[in-house]
Length: 382
Image 1 (cartoon, one colour):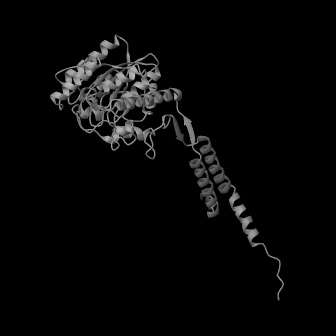
Image 2 (image 1 turned 30 degrees about the vertical axis):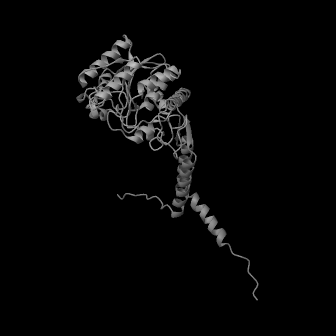
């Protein structure tokens, strides 16, 4: 018995060309008309970003009042948030571009986004490991805390890397006090360590350590001293626990790369930048405050790799202009217009069905061809 095989009719090139035209037109329309989607917690994010900008302005005014110069080479936008290349309280090297990128009030909105994602609510308690190395990110963190109506327990590493809050007369602890006195924030550190290598001031001169102790004392902050990195981690955890008084800590925010907070340079890289709901694989090999909170099920917000975070959330500067409150994908994301994309797909499928199944495209083209080839009226001959 012979089998009969049916072969579909050959699709003409004309039909394929028409389908391609419809597909390309649909794709071009989707690319040309994206949708702008307002992100969740928009009003709260705006409030946090505006608070951060107000704080930047207050710090710049204070710096000017004290006669501390603003270097146009390192701080071209004259923000007042960039320190010097080297001072007696500089703990280690720092990346200037990272410090410049951090001076963006919209990082406060990103903090709101992270904390809201893990369901932190007004009145909740969070812990913060602040750093003199990134005063702008400290500002962003405090702004998010105030805008969200949270309570915070803050411990600061008072020294700073290059271009951070490394002026001995205007450390981060001094900036904190100025911001509270100006009624920008209500949050302040409850304790401070010397910072630097092993969180005990290694790498600083005796004079530098004395200057930091003086800054801690004049701002009425409890000194956090220990003889080793392990002891410093223990002391920080004990301080957080005592200050919490039995209340649950809903999130931990780490700013920068303080040794006790991140657990040396290796520990800093184990946690990914941004929100970490759980400790990453392999994190247990390096003890740190981040690890200990993570092991307790406390989400960790790790503010590091600033360029990567800025790029991911649309916070990179545009054309050398200072960032404005409300800019970035954390407020409004630009996405493909899904209804338009669905319509385009439907049109492509319809074209395929019509041109291939029923040969409508070929019929149209044959009609056009007949029109072109229609006989003309005879012309008189001379």
